[in-house]
Image (cartoon, rainbow, N blue to C red; front, side):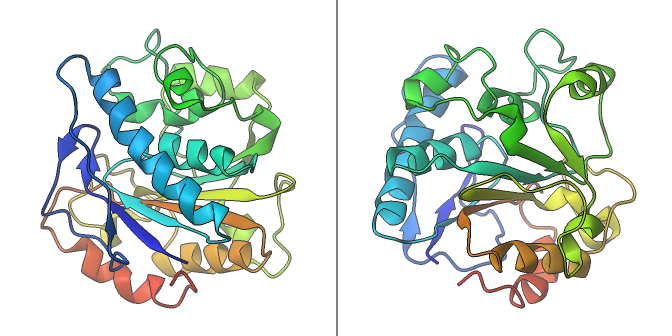
Length: 254
């Protein structure tokens, strides 16, 4: 597996972002255009998609590390460019299924899973050449901090829900995984915030880091994982990366 670093939170460059894995010499950056944030993100995620497509096209399984979850748009676009329609296993304390019409904050980092599922493609996914991932090919794992519009959407959507223990056992209990290749997305705020200092949006409770690592190992053991995304959704400098590094070292990511 090759480790790709995208040191950004949305379009904010974070040269000092602490990450739990050493990048394999691949650091994605882009000359972002002036203008609205979505145009800037399209430029950045287009560069991410190029790197992922090259790695996946040569039989690799890229591990993309960034400061947010929206980078997943570029990763999934890259897998599709390489010829793979991957299902999604999305570990996150939050739903990430807000829309511009439902969000109270306007934070784009609360929308990537909804965008991946086909919400308003003209915003960014069309620019990336990203095809919608069918809802039934998505499993949302560990979400516990949901706004009312997200609850309403998930009640009627075909997105499946699971908890981390469902995927940490020997038989991958719980809802069936999507068929075919998988994109596994790990927002580290799914872990109990007592283990993750400095999170931007901590959600009380949640599983321990060792349990999350077991679930990740089980998924990798299926030999169907085409790419992994790790969202280091913390402020640079609090030391969370050092805490999680030892746990991720037990997972065959590199």
